[in-house]
Structures are given as C-alpha cells and as structure tokens.
Image (cartoon, rainbow, N blue to C red; front, side):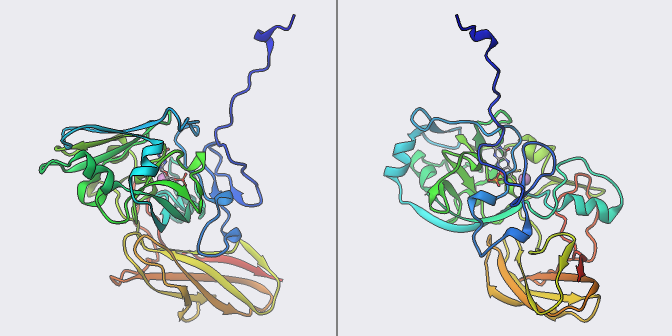
Length: 355
Ligand SMILES: Nc1nc2c(c(=O)[nH]1)N[C@H]1C(S)=C(S)[C@@H](COP(=O)(O)O)O[C@H]1N2
Ligand SMILES: [Mo]
C-alpha cells in the first residue's frame, strides 16, 4: 500500500513566475528579484522581467472565493465586492505607471558610503513600468460613502507579511490611484498582486499594496510597520515616512559594462516620482555635461526614456547620467546617509571597458 506520509514534501516556490537568470538579478533573499537593466526594452517592462519585491511568499489567492472588504469609521457603511463585481460594476481605467522600490540601488549606496545597510541589497533593478488596468480606488470608496472626517485609507495584503501602508485620503482619491486587476494587458500575475493590487502613482513601491483583501478608511491617522519602522527616512533630523521617490536615472548597460569599440546608442530611463523629468544630461570620462535626447517625455509617476550617441575608443571609460525634475532638482553627486539606505539617487559613475 502506498504510504502517503512518506511522499516527498513539496514546498511551493516563493515566487510563481520563472526567474530567468538572463533577465533578472538575484539580491539573494529568495523573495526579491530585480530586472537586469541591460535587458530593458522600450517604455513598458514585460511581466517576465518585472522586478518582484515580496516580504513573504506570493500567496495563491482563489478569485472565486476572494472578496474585497472596505470598512472602518471613515465609511458610512462597510461594503464587500467579489472579483466579478469589481469587473462588472465600475469603469475600467488604464494608466501607464512606474513602480520603484524605495530601496533600489541600496548596494550602490552602501558602496558610496563605505558602510553596510540591512535590507535587500538591490542593484539598479528594483524599478519597472507597466500598463495597469483596474478600477479607481475613488470609485470603490465613493460607493461605501466616505465620511467628512475621513483622513486615511489603508489597503491590506493577504500575504503572510500582511503588507499594508496608509495613504492620505487625497492620494487615495487621485485620478490615477487604481486597484489594478490587470498588468500589460494580462490578468494581474500572482507575484504582482493577483487578484488585485493598489497602484499609487509616483510613490515608493511599498504603497502599491499587493493581494489586497481589505481597505480600511479611518477618521484618525493610521500607522503601520511600513510607516513607522520600514520605508521611513531615518536621519539625524528624525524619522519620516517616505512618499514620493527622488529623481534618478538608469543606464541600460550591465554594471560594469564591456562593449566593443565603435558607434553605438546608449539608452536608459529617468524617473522623478510624483514629478516630471525635465531633462537628462550625460558626460563621458568626467568631461563636459551634454544633453541626452528625451525619446519619451514620461510624466508624473512615469519614467522618461532617453538616449545619446557614443563612439568610444578602446580602454576604460565612465558614463555619468544626471536627470533633473521639473522643479529643478537634479540628481546629487552624493546621497546623504539615512539609516535604512532608502532613496539613493546619486549620479552613478558607470564603469565601461571598451575593447
Ligand atoms: N501585500 C504586499 N504588498 C506589497 C509588498 C509585499 O511584500 N506585500 N511589497 C511592496 C514593495 S516594498 C514593493 S517595492 C512593491 C513591488 O511590487 P512588484 O513586486 O509588483 O514589483 O510591492 C509592494 N506591495
Ligand atoms: Mo519596496
């Protein structure tokens, strides 16, 4: 007789989608994977290489039994929506928005400061842009009836980490704050929040809560570990929750790069959180700054793409790219220390060997 107790135990993988080494970087946590910047193509990041940041394994949620509950003293009456009702009862909206983890580039930040951080040692790959399709959070909250004194909205995830983070009501009601059901024309993939995730335009990735099962609306300010312990800027001046992310740019070359000599086009992206990228400059080997060409202008919550032409001679070179947002804030030469290593946006000195 077969002895079931001796069947091999199969732990489901922490991440559902394949993580091909030729597309993704592995910072070593077993839960988080970044895109390889030299494998980016175009304005939209395909799902097969969109970075994953998970505080616990991807939960397998059954959409048939799943329901979204909206409750709290900030709504007149609690409401529950099934998956089917979300699709049927609200206008579907699509927005193209970038999501960047506040810890992006932490490994480079540690190298810049010459001191370690705890937290995921991201290279440059904790960023991506997708077309998110879903329903406006505003439309959902309106049906529940927001009370005049409501001030905070907290989506809560069904993962073992119970990922959650409060949003001020005004941000929750913004035109482009969505409860997304789809990504790049597909049903939202499990690792990116199936059946439903929030997309909070221009804010750190942690605000875009995945696998949402409940949304709490409150008449008092809400706190959660992701606004008190993590995803806060801790400096000598105090502790502040991170909201938008500062202007930064990304060169779509491996770090370090090895390239054949001769003419080529260097491409990349620049992202300024809730602001717009105004311009992108570059310099080679510490020479004069010159403008890069903006191919797609991007916008608030959406990266811009740029390029410049380069015809390097053999030898060791450096490329620096410096983006400026529409409030005139440029990437700095160095990022001031903060205890958890967030929001690194220094101009990177990209090493390139030409052969
Ligand atoms: N429920 C839940 N939501 C979450 C997380 C999580 O671990 N649990 N990670 C957050 C963080 S820190 C980031 S950067 C983004 C990453 O989204 P992605 O995995 O789709 O790229 O999801 C956010 N939403
Ligand atoms: Mo993140």
